[in-house]
Image 1 (cartoon, one colour):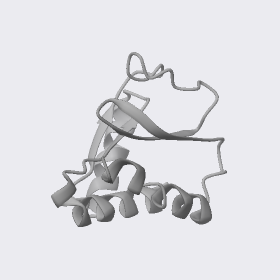
Image 2 (image 1 turned 90 degrees about the vertical axis):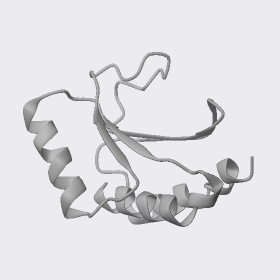
Image 3 (image 1 turned 135 degrees about the horizontal axis):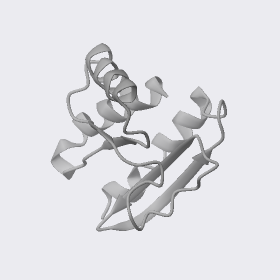
Image 4 (image 1 turned 60 degrees about the vertical axis):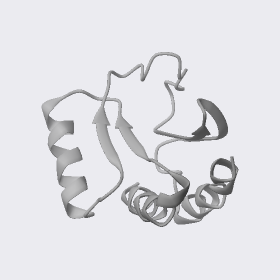
Length: 109
């Protein structure tokens, strides 16, 4: 997942003129997860991507799959344009590239 976060941060920087924003929400509000999120931000030198913690159910109204290890939403104007759900260990480098290829769906609006 760190590869995904780093690439999303880079894409956000490159698409600043399109007002692209990015964030990662960890569905775990423990002190341990807070520490891991801070370490991730520092280690990956994230400049644009916001890291946040929320409860295991996820943000209200997002209907996050409880069985998913990673859920990626690409949206604009509060409308989801692409939704990716991965079980633990299934988010590969090829899948990261697949997600990034979908960015034009939100940048063209």
